[in-house]
Structures are given as C-alpha cells and as structure tokens.
Image (tube, helix red, strand yellow):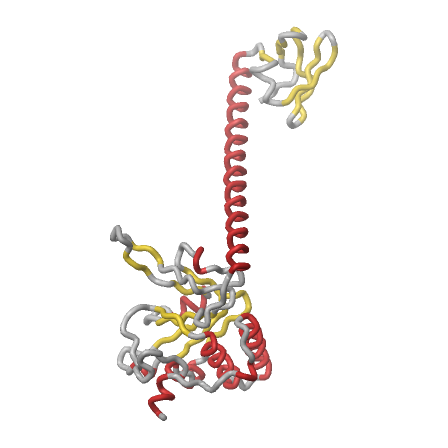
Length: 286
C-alpha cells in the first residue's frame, strides 16, 4: 500500500498531501504547513483519503490494528487479574503460615500403586486422591495438616507380599510455600532440593512398619483402605536419620544430614534426642 502523495482532507486544515509515512506516524502537507498524525488511527477520525480504494485499505488496516490492540489489552487484563489472584493467594498463605500451629502428626505417607513410582519421582509431586462429595461429585482430598514443615513419604509393596513388607521408596519435603488447606488440585509438590529416591537395595532395608504403628492397635500391621494417612513428625525424623546412615557416599550422607537438620528445625525436634524407632514390626518382634 503506497500512501505517499495520496490526497487527504482534514476538517480544519482542508486538503493536503501525504509526504511521509514513518512507522506509527504520517506527515501531511497542508497549505498552512506540515502536520503529523498517528497512523492509522487518524484516518476516519481526522483524515479522509480521497481515493476510495486506498481509503478501504487503510480502514481495514486500522480495524486490524484495533483488533490486535484489543487482544493485547485483554491478555494484559488476564495477566493483571491472574497476578492479583496470585498476590491475594500469597497474602492468604502468609497469613496461614504465620498463624500455623504445628501438629505432632503433620507428615503424610502414601501408598504407591503399581506403575506410579516413576511418575511420582520424575514429576516430584504426589496426588492425594479423590473423594465423593455430598453431591456425589469427585473432588481431590485436601490434606489440611500438610504445611511447609511436612514431608511426603512414598511406600509400596508387591501384590503377593504381606503388608509388613511395605518398603519406603523415597520421600520429599513439601514445597516451602505449600499450604494443604489451600490446595485445590490435590497435588502436593516437592521442595526444589530436599527430595530423595532410594535405590532398590536401600529400599529393601527401609521397612515402613519399623516406624509406624496405630496407637489404638500398636501391634496391628494393616493398611485397610485409602492411599494416604498422617503420621508423626518424630517418626519421619527417624526415617530420614536411618536413610542417612544407609548412605555410603560422603556427599550423599552429607546431603541427607542437611535435610534432617532442616526437617528437625522446622518441626522443633532435637536430633540428638530422637528415640529409637518403635513401629509395629519392632513391637511384634519384642
């Protein structure tokens, strides 16, 4: 579209001739002198092309530009709304974190189904599962006890194995800003650093029921239903400590020790004062 030398009419300045088109501006020569206008915004508002074909082309271009601007404005508005929602969520998180009362059982252990292990340890998040609502709809469980001081323990056993052979596959500290009460999608994300997956050999040595027991039935080794359950902060510290003792590589051992110190600090536990594990397997054996 060639607009140079095209004839235009302005309500005030009269007839003129386009002498230059420079990006977003157009210069028009009138009898009273050169005037600069925004392009293509001025056409149809202040300026009118005398050539009908050029007028249609500029009108179409103007509509296209306006549509693109509107689209950009809508995108910017979406971003602004999303940012405002994120800011409000962060304020709510901060409020909940400041008012958070530590529970002595704010850890979660998960039953890992066959085929889930690789997904959990590659994406480093675990799904809490679905529950039926009063309207017979399915919604994710909200583990309201889970907070920035919590860890998620991943366990599994083979279908043909007894429950006492449930092994610990790994664990992660939850993401530092996670608040279970505000979790809507049911996924608990891992801390960006404090995450551990055990080797098969290590897992065989870490039996879950050495640490966990039902306080009402301390000698029972049963997991009747559900994919997860809460358990004691102290038991999680014992597990991390025993995983640290399994490690032969000094760097790996140092890393697990760093996690243990972080976890105990977050849960107000004294590493030197941790009791020996006394889970159901230990109780039955004694």
